[in-house]
Image (cartoon, rainbow, N blue to C red; front, side, top):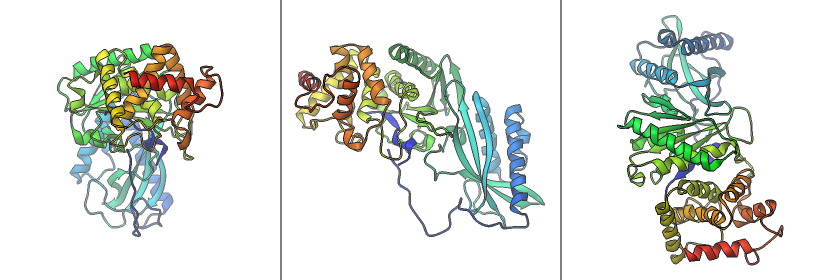
Length: 438
């Protein structure tokens, strides 16, 4: 599993398999086909990229479409939409760059047949949303070129999805968008949201509430929220195959330059989910809490180190419910029910089991109870310190339960002994007693 997909975080009561084939696939390296040398083709591709970058900067749609197959109406329609969408955002960085080629060419998205001697090239789009992202992230495409009427012409293209550390299926690639900036929130919709302006206000209020609880801890200057009522859009956006049981998802972005911190995040909210009950305020608070954590949260790595999900989701649920006694009471009922059903396994869940259907709702509330208990027994500021300490370091699978919590409590001076068991941990005994009292 990729580092990016490993920490997709969701609001609610994720992950992909890749097949294999012995046949050549689009995107595989190959030799030159046609009358042009590799150097000649690369020069043409780079010239088109430079022209498209200049067109985005100046707003020149005609230049943007230059060099495309004008007879491919689906391609031209998409490129007009794509151009308008990109122009609608305030990017600090927006640049196409050449990666490599030529590649095996097979039809991708906008044609079923290709001209003879078609070649593919990988093109990367670098993006950084102003105030939202702290660094540059990337999407890659396969561009297919062929000689048409004596000109080197772009005849088709599609996303490159083999590298899970890169984002694909960005909403601006898929559908016309409406973008609105209000204070420290950037709201985006696909046109399916009727009362869009009302949700702009809801998102701004949610951001203010989260920032109040976050205090002086470093945070992004703004958050990007993508709203839809379309189940297909919610599932597909940003390439994470978001499950239907959730009503919100936060997608952390990896930077093009390696870092132990995330480059930024995208939040998607499903306004058609019955779980929002027509009011996404707490869902937005939950996902904004995930997004605001990106500046302090350690990126999961390929060696199995990752931040415990019970802490990530539990803290977001804790912040989500801070203003609502009714929502806290709901979590208490979930815990009572889970204890009665034997769902508490005398530990906090590890990451591999956190989202299992049988335990998922209980696990969210169990994580919530840790921070709620600390806040009630000590203070909100102490709960914040515990979360920030856990989020700032990864744990191996066998240390993602209460052991991760015990080590953090000792590091913060909240536990006397460096090594304790559940049986002799005063915190554990008091917390489990708290659970039984709910």
